Length: 585
Image 1 (cartoon, rainbow, N blue to C red):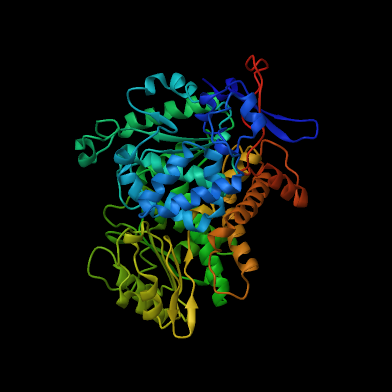
Image 2: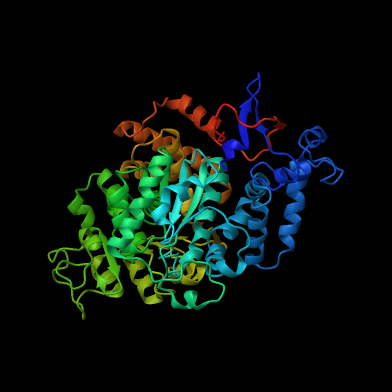
């Protein structure tokens, strides 16, 4: 049953929102988006058939948050804490978001990286309640009926994954749905997007992970992955059905394998507003960090020689974003490409190299660029590239732990006074270098940021705070901005605007410090700044379907439309929804 048949968001004569519902009693307590638990007032309890079904005392939300936080603290492991938050989300969703919002820096590593990787790996074992939409080879032929089963009538934000390339742990089958759930939690607590408007999707096209399929508790489709035309036909059906039911929906493609990631993005970005967080979100956050690092060291982006180790979706996305940033500073495309050295497992991408995938080709260095270089294999390796390429900035997206060796780091430090070293691979166990080593091996000169959270590093008399290059600084604001202006397309310019907004905020708010990224407690402020710049970029390109104000009026609009985790009054209205009003606030 659609939620619009169960409740409606109304406003009283003074413009204050409240919820009308046609559900009473125990059923209402099972309705997670509306359930307030012990916070239902005495009057609400009488009206809603809850009298006697709840403890006597009426709690405030703050009291509930404190009770839940104490329960959270009693969970010993990070995975146990994750399971607790998921249980709360499936019981009282608004309270769950309020709790996370109050303790964001502490809880974000639980609901997102690094703990979500463990939750993905154990998804079938820890599973308790279904969430989101599951599309599989058995039901895709009935996709319109499947999508009609989803209870929200005004979905605006979708995170969809086929789970083929989860973080650095590869094909995780149906378990990747945990990533979609976690990302949408961040859209809500960090980006102000109402849970009434969001939908996590598991594109369960099968798995090639034999250990998963052999597991007796595995919940996903028991078949090899769909590939090639069968895979694209599956995605085509999903996209067309989404467009039909929710024409204003934005799709974030998540954790698709590198070939599929680029193919899907190119195939559908003009079909419906969509983006790939692994490509564009990672690229945006890395670009913002490098811009901030350049400002700290007194150079410009165009002055750096950047080595990107890892040529998957994230690595190429970072290379593309940095190239766009260099071009904005006046370099030609060819000049910028020559300053971005991308390596995969076979070495530097160079023209004529064997086994060069199509999506990597635009970063293949010309033979003139490496004229005079000496190398032993088909292409220069990491050390050979650093030595002969004049690398000043080292970015890791390889998933190869400890691949940034002391020799490599010391060679980069010979090329610049302040080497920029960003090991961005997730989860923590896959990071290319520990921050303590990067700082020690450069005698405290390195500017370091990481993909996973790390404690500050003491070196000499200086405390180095390690910035986390977390995509959460980009995608919630990007999605919010695109949603508010009803973007027809999410353009590269909108992604670059998001990166510039993040860098500008860090440099403005934390002037006089060494911070490369802001602390996670600033996430909501950052998301609002990002959303504003994204909307401005969309308007400049004519990608907005709704007219947008500018300046302070746009700032006020974003603030007014930013969803807040607070309880609304609930009123019972017998007789059901008679006017067809939608449930979404």
